[in-house]
Image (cartoon, rainbow, N blue to C red; front, side, top):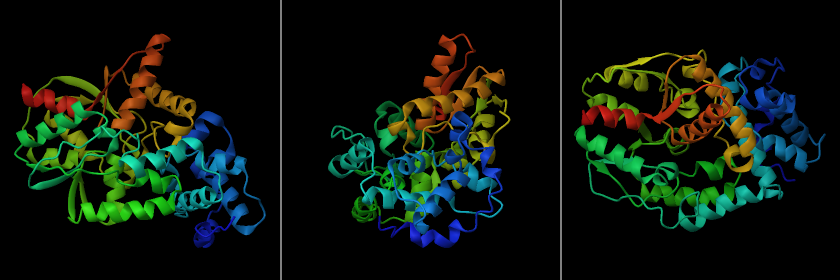
Length: 353
């Protein structure tokens, strides 16, 4: 294996002091109990590969792809090891060495051929002229009713969205190691979006467009809060912070301010804001290991049910999807009940009242 990407992070791999602080927050480790599923375990494997002590294998590939990219480890790391960057580099080398899963290869093909991760040519953005460039993202494009709801919310608040015939933000290609495909895709994206300022609906798209392309990105919650009038829905709910929104973008208070403005009493889970527990939907796991994703989501739903709140609210479509599924399973087993809703549902309900 050439290790052309991973060798750039050789010095970073030596920074890890093997302290195990990363164990506590790792969602995969909480389910499996294997050290190789923690950030420490993964950096040891990556170091073994780049130093030549370990030969790349399917086992190593499986372990390095078994990560939700939640960045909880980076948040806790006293040595500030760039775990996600190391994993992204290792994955890129493994993909070029032929270790990509069929599921992930299918996703990369979908993005190249259709512009979205689902490979659905019928998924199209509702293009319109406007003043503010708004990026919808694959997950919301696959949920046209939610997309329309967000656009109606913006228009009702006096914002005129500019919607282009968009393509995927590119995050899945980069995160899952398809660097060559990503570089081609990146050129297309930047040609389509020369603007410096963008509003993004999806937390992951928002974080990635900001980090990778250097754009000034507002998440939709920030745009809504700027114009939102006060209402009184009289609801009680707990709030789930999406990983990319909280740990990458640092956006934790805006969604809560929206809910407070709408008369929603928030009952916090113990792990909230930058210590929020991952839903299990990121990093490619939802595509390649749905059972693991489900198990991680169940842990978060147990926390939500324990608050006593009847409702869990999140602004992320992927978080909503996996948590809603976990909540349904929990209810079916008689282990408690909680309703899961997207933040846009709550905002739209308030604006219509």
